[in-house]
Image (tube, rainbow, N blue to C red; front, side, top):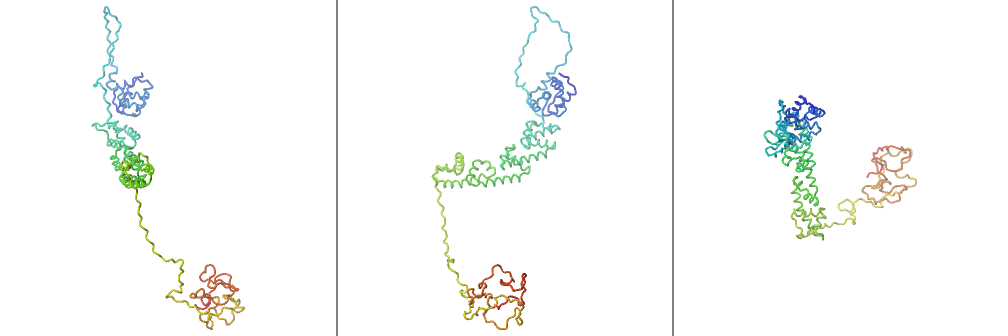
Amino acid sequence: MAELELETIDRAVRWCAEAGRQATANEVRLALGSLGWDQLLSVRALLADPPPARPLGPWALADLARGVPADVAAERERDARYPRPDTAASRVPAAPAVAQPPAEPRKKAGRSTRRQVVVRKAKPATAEQAPDAPRLPLIEELLLPAGRGELARLVRRHGGRRPVLAAALAATYRRADGAPVGSADLDAALEHHGLERAFLRRERDELFHSVRAAKGVLAKAATGLGHDLASLRLAIGRLGLDADVKRLREARRRDLRSKATLSERAQLWVGSGDALADLELLDEVEKDLKKRLPEHLRALATTREPLEQGLVRTLALPVATVRDLLTRLGIDLSTPVAPAAPVARPPRPARPATPDTRRTPPAAPHARSGERQPFRRPAGDRPSTARPSGARPSGARPSGARPSGARPSGARPSGARPSGARPSGARPSAARPYDARPAGPRPPGARPYGSRPPGPRTPGARPAGPRRPGGPSSGPRRPSPGGGRRGPAR
């Protein structure tokens, strides 16, 4: 056994006070007196740091020096497995008394000098001698500098779940007035150590993610967070999550309403009734099933298949689930179900008779009443279109200079042209029908009467035909002084 120093004893007394246990110098001397020199070195190293757990006394300090974990030593201290201060004081060796000379033994005749062994039986423990229940430290000790580390450790273990964290504090500390430790004491400790803002942010994030993981069902989220439904709603309003939670629940309602088939509605109503009630959709789904399921049974009555088997097949549900569904809706399959009556469709209205214009050709434009009839000259009055031999084709010009005395371009000859006569090759009048053609043979190379040259015509372009000999090979044609094409007026 190594010798204890007074400095080590004083430091151990202060260390135990910081760990939540009051100890005396005699108790420390008795607890640490049986340690070796290497274990005393471990004690001094432990006393140099704050206590790793609460509560810890001198006997727990000795166990820590022997290698016992801190949580195990604290648990032993709470369960009162270590000697109490009154018991420990009785074990302290008393001060040595003054030595007195031994008295001479008196010899008695007939008796042996051998020492006799005395056996003493322990008295049964009574109720009065039972050890007292361990007293928890006051919550005010959590406000000490060493309480910051303890509070941070509890937050790391339990997260932002306020009810669970308050229950952990209530199991470790007590109040002086005897009331249980609650959420107000937790807020006071967090504010004292400057951890309130970080804890509120963590509590807000965990609550929102729990509601999102529960798909907007508040009852399921409250179970994971340690809340009841009322306290969860209060926490949502306190943390400013009303709009976010409302948006999550509305999206979940739209998702459930999109499952509109009879089979999906039946599965939701039987298997997710609590979620539908939490989202306020249970009455809506129940009314829809009570309306559509009898119609479905009447449709199944038209077949030869049993109704229960038909429901199992069409709803894709087990037999037990189908029976539970019918029982909860109050539908009895033993009652005969009348088949659905055929839906009478209104007669289609008769279509009015319309004349068939596809086979009857329309009347000729000139045969309509009230319109002016085109003028058609008799065949005998038309001029002959025969050309003398050697005459140039229509539209061609002779090469070379114009002979003297010839009229300028655009001038009209002195002789009057017969009324209605036109030169050969001129364009027919718009009023003359296309079937009225001049009599006589057509010149060679002339295009058909009334036809146009192939391809689109641009405004101001010269009609297709032979070019003037010696004329320009490219470029627009120079306009004539007469301002237009030659020919008789129309």
